[in-house]
Structures are given as C-alpha cells and as structure tokens.
Length: 370
Image (cartoon, rainbow, N blue to C red; front, side):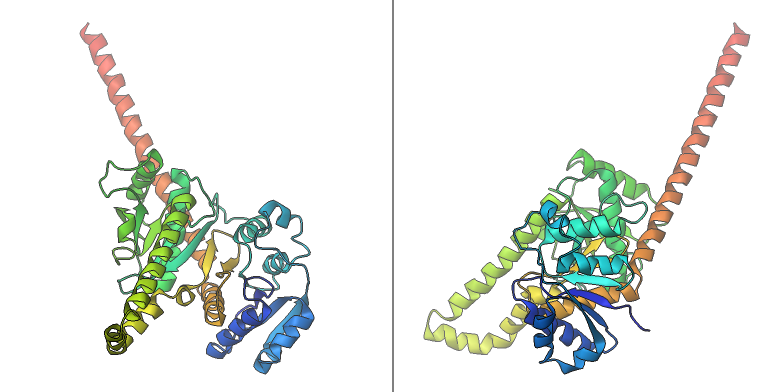
C-alpha cells in the first residue's frame, strides 16, 4: 500500500530542524514506504538532509521561514496560519497534498489551526488530545482528553470514549477495548453530574465496539485494568503531568541511590539490565505521538523535547492511523450510537404510547362505571 505523504513541521520543537529531519529519516529506515512533505526553512532542511541522503528521493520541501513560537498565544498564531511552517503543514492535509501532519510545536496553536482548517467529523463537537501511556498490561493505555478542552459535558465525554476506543482498536487489536471514566472513586454514586450522565449514556448504548467498565481512579491508570481512560482536558492534563513527574522522581531516586556508595554502585552493575528496562519503559520518547482525535484528517503532536527516536515514533503513529483509516472508524461508531439513540427513542415512544392508551382506557372504564 502506498501511503499519502506525511507533512512534517520541520521548524517545530525544542531540538530544531536537525532532530525533526533525523526522526523522519529514522521512521523511513523502519518503513521505506514513507513519503514526506518537509515544511520549513529550505536551506536549513537541505543542510539537515545532507546526513540522510536516502531521504532526498522521498521528500519534497515546502519553504517557509516563519515559525510559531512556544509561548505564542493560539489566537495570535491563527492569524499567521498561512505563513508559518505549522499552519502550512496542517493546510497540506486540508488540501490533500498530505495525508497527515506531524509537529512538535506549540500545542495550543496546533490544535487551533487544526480545528479551524480541518473541522471536526460530523457528530463530534470538540476534538480531543489523546496519547499512549505505559501500563503493566499487555498494551499501552490511551488517555484523553489531555488538555484540549478544560470543561466537558456528558456528550463530550461519550464522544471521547468512542474516539478513544476506535484508536485503541488500532493500537491493541482488541475488538471491544475496555473503557473507563476517570473519577475520584469507583462507586456508582461518585463524581460530577457530567460523569454520572456520561455513564448512563454509555451503559445504555448498544452495538458500540467498546466495553464500558465504569469508573477508574488516577492511581490505577497505568495498572493495565483498562485500555482507554476518558476525562476532561483539565483533569487529564493534571493526571498526565503527575504521572510524568512520578516517573522522573523514581528515575532520579534510583540514580541517587545507586551512586551513594561503592556498595550501591556494585549493586547497580548487578541490577543494570532491570534498570535499563525500567528506563526504556518510562522514556516518553518511546510513547511519543499524541493525536488530535475527531478531526477530518490526522494530526499528531510530538513532544517539544523529543529526540530523533521520539519524532520517528510520532511519524509512525501518523502513518498507522492513515493505514487503518481512523477517521472512518470513528464515523462508523458515531453512526452506530445514533442508531442506538433512535432505537431507544422508539422504545420510549412506544412505551409512552402504551401508557397513554392504558390511561385512556382506565379513564373510559371509570366513566362507564360512574
């Protein structure tokens, strides 16, 4: 299968053009069918390509020397969407010149540009930012929203559950991924009105390709108990930063412990294979590539501090979602949810009609008895 090109914002990210091009080159070495549209300053991109000659035949350069800064407000970045590397990469997807866009730039600006340019899938009110996180289970866990929407109602949460499950089916191969809502407890009575209503809607829905398992607490996110964790962007971003901070804390704690004495250093040499495995599992570069779900196109956000391996993983995520046609999967699940609502409405109307007929018959009987 020939993939559509992947537009890479070569100017985004903390590490610069060299890292973005090196990451794209690494992805191509893993999968030689990748083609690229490299968006950014042409002289700098050509200089970076000197170290990766195999990329030249697989890439086209779209020159642009205007860059969205990391601290730029999304509203300001939107006004320059037609002149920045980020904006042109997203627009390439809209125009059909690329199948997906990858950027390591300003998250807020990327979301704003993507939403305005690509629009949301019919039936989706708001796109959500979803990412893979390590777990003790057989597969990584998908969590959304991670910051795109600070406030969400029950309808948004249900849509996030459907989008997250569609993404999880691609990643895990499960036909019905286990979905849970993030809450302060697992009891049915816990949580906000939005969570309670979303729970009722998900339990009532039939035919969806997911298994709704109720609530999950934050300390269980990485335990492997579910495949998709759904929450609003405010809570999700806090949970994500807390998990990342805990991972860094454990890593630094082990480093300090193993260098505290000669005996500790010897212990480190003995346990090095295990610590290297832990380091690999906790390295964010190995789970890099957050996805803006719910758009009419694939947009992947790379960590700003990602190295070449991290960028390569983000590019691979974009390609896989293109191959598996994520947008179509989400649309099909939304259609099924709509059918479920129609069936539920029809049953409710039928039940109401029966009740009204029974009431009318009772009234008639009482009138005849009088």
